[in-house]
Every structure is written in C-alpha cells, then in structure tokens.
Amino acid sequence: MTLPIFEPSVPPSSGTRHKPEIKLLEAEFGDGYTQSARRGINHLRRTLALSWDKLLPWQEAEIMGFLTERGGDRLFYFTPTGERKALKWTCQEFDSAHNNDGFQVSATFKQSFNLEN
Image (tube, rainbow, N blue to C red; front, side, top):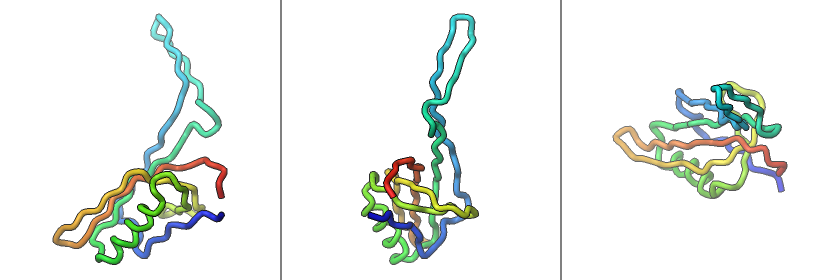
C-alpha cells in the first residue's frame, strides 16, 4: 500500500522548528573521560515542530482529520518547507485551538526510517 502524502491546502506558518534527536551509546570512565558511538545507522532522527495559524474551520478540519486518521503510528510523506524531497514521518502530538483569529493547529512530526512505502 502506498503511503499518503500530507499536503494541506495551507502551508505551515513561519517559525517551523527543526530539532534533531540524536541517539548515542556512551561510556563514562572514572577520570571524567567519555567515549561515544553512534547508536545504529539512523542515529540522527529529525523532528519538526509545525503550526498553522489563522485557519478557517474547514482548513483546521482538513489538517486535524489527516493527523487523526494516521493515529500516531501510521506513516505519511511530507516535504518540509524549502526542501525538495518528501520524507517519511509520524505524528503522535498534535492539537487545535480556537481564538479570535480563527483556528490554530500545532503538530510535532518525527522522521521515520521504516521500510514501509
């Protein structure tokens, strides 16, 4: 089964935060010396903190519906702003709020290295 592509009708608002999640094996020695090694071939996983501001109700429903349908564990493709290649992601954290300017959606995407296409 082909993975869906997340292409909301509204791009994320400016201020997307890119934060790497780095996994290392570390050994600390008694004299303060530490030795580190990468934990696996995919030791560097990207996370994106995204937000969509000033959304209309149908735009909020579109984004929240897609993320809810993926359920936090099902992969999807997404191309971060300014990049050319879509990567595989999951999203376990997302929320929606309503204010005087409309709706706002926030989500945290984690890069996935699963072999599923």
